[in-house]
Image (cartoon, rainbow, N blue to C red; front, side, top):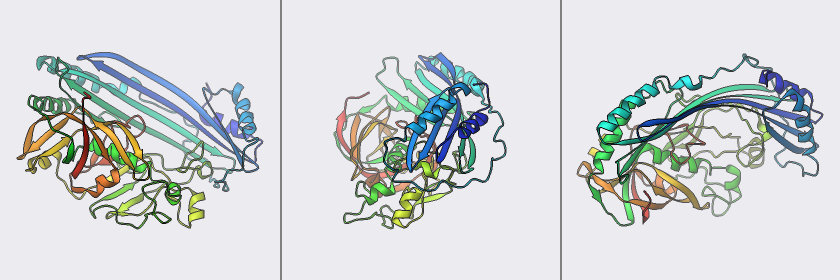
Length: 458
């Protein structure tokens, strides 16, 4: 595709014969580097272009998406989206498309992505870490990825929106040469300019040192210190389970037993406050709704709707659930679009080291979770495994590494059992990092976390 994508989007819109039409174009550039056994193994750069055409005919919706659109195949895509309306029922979320206010500044400007050069400072720093690891008899494995994506939205009612997003993630595993002991660290960064690899290596070397002593513990309910990665994974699952419609239909943990939702109910301690904001520093995201298909979380008829700060939980009280314009009109509330970031505010400035030092009774320090699955959506009971770091903390210090566990816990119950929060900061959800990287959460001290069985996973 040699044409600017903004021009292709406009051309597709001009070809439409539908009552209404929505065209979404996106260009992405993803650079990555991978390493194993203290040696870089691969690096790469991938570039992609995609186009979605959503047609509305007689209240019915048809959507077709393709990669690598060309001027030659453009009309075919538009016609197929119109044909896809045939035989379908009228969309239950049908609403008038939002009116437009013209193209924003920079609508037709070309995109610029940093490419593999985004790792210009990371790569030599990793080389230094590899040399340190070899001297310490440690093996490093890992992966870094940086993505830039630009999106164009155009509708037949004149809506024009454009957004460019940058994000990146870095994950490093450290292992002993016999692979018997391991630990992990992960972070997010939109530029990689702020990544301190030396500090990350020091962190990993300290964790491997903790594993020199091992402690076998049985399944039980334990007080735990959850590192931010583990907190972010649990909160992500909570967030994507917060549809207002599903709650009102009695299908989620946020449904009242009789009818309606639990909005207005005190679910957590008063210290718990959760919000999303597309302008949140360090984790800025798209400030408008973008949907190529409808669900209980988003509607194609809301495309272009401005997204602002939303307080989901205030002082422990559930204040809002994700809702479309259609569902808000039915339920009599305000629409609250999904925002692609999440913040758990903390009143504390304490870091994890201070929380460990203040721990006097036996407590498990949990680094991260993996293989998280839901057991019961109506209670949001989740199960999953610990991985790459469970430690016993007592008398103000780490006593040694503990075996892995399978857990059974609802993130709603987890937040209800919070007795201490550390300092809020950026966190990479390890399990869901492929989909969601825009979290700012603190480490948490949680009472009676259910470690339901011992796991042999390593």
